[in-house]
Amino acid sequence: MSERETAEPVELAINGVSCVRDGRTLFTQLEYNCPRGTVLQVLGFNGAGKTTLLNALAGLLPCSEGEILWRGHPIRRSRAFTAEVFYLGHQVPVKPSLTVWENLHWLARLRGQAVAAEQGLQALAQVDLDAYHGALCRNLSAGQKRRVALAQLYLSGERLWILDEPFTAIDKEGVARLQDLLQQHAERGGIAVITSHQALELPGLKNLNLSDYQPLDAYDYA
Amino acid sequence: MTMPDARPPVAGAWRAVLARDLKLSWRQRSDLVNPLLFYLITITLLPLGVDPSRQLLGSIAPGMLWIMALLATLLSLDSLFRCDYEDGTLVQFQLSSEPLFLTVLGKITAYWLTTGLPLALVSPLLAVMLALPPSGYLALVLSLLLGTAIMALIGALGAALTVCLRAGGLILTLVVMPLYLPVLIIGANAVSSAVAGFGYGRELALLGAGLALALMVMPAAVAGALRVSANQ
Image (tube, rainbow over the protein chains, first blue to last red):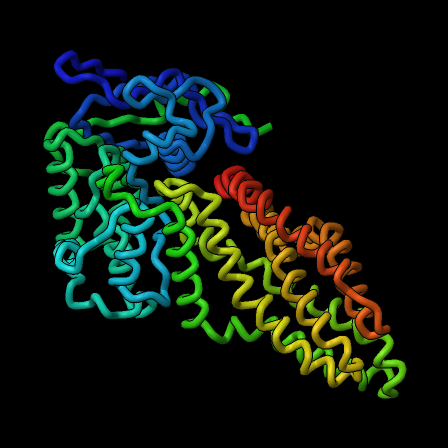
């Protein structure tokens, strides 16, 4: 499955990676190279290891075999890499008892970014939450809470976006807008790795199907 | 943008987390009252359940005030990282450009300010109920101020190690309890010495040394524990 494009240098390289979880090998010998401007959709059935792969790509989990390189350097414990990653898991890091604005400001602060009022409101407007900026997040719907976290993408200067099921609970129009944003990110030379069960309409979208890298005894639990 | 110039100062991470956690605690005040209420109720029940004679109460008061403060701390420890773990904030901490140990220290500071500090401050009031001789009040407050801070730092390690476990509370207690024992012994001793009319400077110095050691070691240890256990 690995496609080598000679035009763009490879930024994110997955070299022979295997991940084991609870004694079960999820995928082995995974090879994939992402040059600049890649949007990669990770596919696989439930429990195939999509989230595990994303966590490994973010440097949160060690791989049991192989290594992941960012611009030629291993990503584990690398500050330079961490500064270039934006990761959003399937849980939404939004506090119910903080307001939308406070959550936005705080998440940006964690990423090392101070958000000016105007900039923040613009990002919120992109996710249709500018009218709610003073509302407590406990009063928002699940989709709106996710939008609060997704607003970070409009502020983000990170090169690598790792998004686990970003479209969960997002309405149709929001999904379309998020796809546009992913495309813009790719055009700017960024890389996005996402998991989703939705069929995405993105030109140049790459697919990585984890079922292709399953070990032979994947179903053998004994 | 993560340009080095635009990066906030180093202690900024500590202050930002501290401010956020204090704000969160203030907005969820009802959770805040729990350890304090536990402390109040157990101490109030003691004379009723044991014996209201001043002599007996006065003699067990130093130990009891300390034991109940320890249990009250233990009661609230489990939630220290749980909420941030469940909503994925912990992952953002790990991927933050700020060092994790500073973030952790900010959380522990906020935790101590909202549990340990109030416990230490109300303790003289409860000491009156247990007929502790007034000469022990100052020793009680000072030893609890230092002791609860040490317990918060040690407890954070237990909380970090058990954050991914469903029933982490019991294991947390088992992990943390042995480390709390020296603190309890020294702390209760400080109060007893003060009541007996001896100096208690030695005990406070020991607690202070313990706090200094815990401050040096624990934030990094907790950060390491979180990196291991939060991604299971």
